Length: 71
Image (cartoon, rainbow, N blue to C red):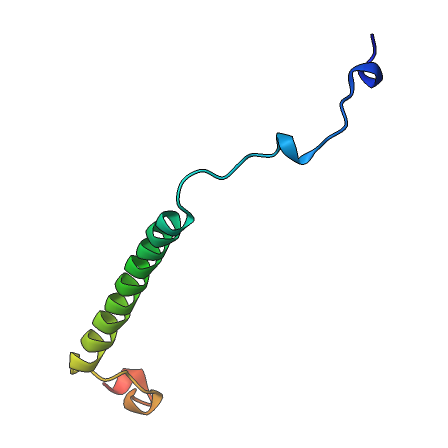
């Protein structure tokens, strides 16, 4: 018996059937995405707040001495 003899024509009956509420699954995925968004916004806000409170200014080239041996 070859595989050609046992071949059955495919149909939509062999496809998986969705189970459960699509709305519930959508709400779970959306809740996770919202948590990730909030964590990202809080992280960004924390970095910005820290950078604004830092009283140190960046070292510019004009701040460096021309000849480091004359410090």
